[in-house]
Amino acid sequence: MNLYPLSYKEFLLATKQIDALKDYYFVCGMPEAVQHFVSHHSYDEVRNIQKRILLDYEHDFPRPKISKVWNSIPIQISNNTYEGKRGKGFDVAVKWLADCGLIYIVNRVRQVKPPLKIHEDFNTFQLYLLDIGLLGCIAKLDEHTLSKQYICQQFMATEHVSIYCADDTDFLIEKEDGIIPISAQKAL
Image (tube, rainbow, N blue to C red):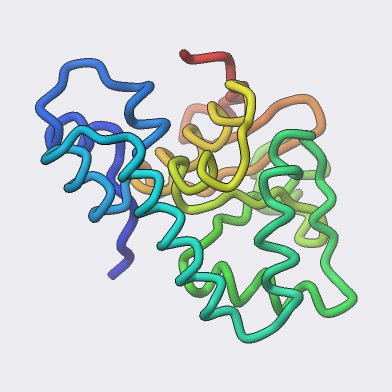
């Protein structure tokens, strides 16, 4: 069974709010952070909880390369680069983080033609953190970057579909009726 941070819909139910996208971008879905936010509505305390969660994660990293990959994710997402080339021992770090459920790997496709799976480039990919609140805690990022993280996180937690990236669009998903390109826009 895979556990994910709360989706936006689950966050709205937990906080009893109708529209709380800015709060979701800040707090997101780590249960302890959401619970504290619901009880106390304290952004400072939520950020402290997120910092502690991040420190706990980093203390569990068995190798320095894992920390290096982990710390490169905000830069990679914001630059919209596919610097996630495997090799030089980093593939083990990426696999470790993905197997632990701390990151999502979105593979690039060489051609945007169905079926996307056969055009997948396993050597070039984009990495995303499991939680937009933790991403915001690590680095102050622009709305486009946060929106990309949000889209990835929602698809992973609720849609359970394979998502891909390409040079000219942030995400691609394939449904029975074709390929759907998704570009992140400023949402706040």
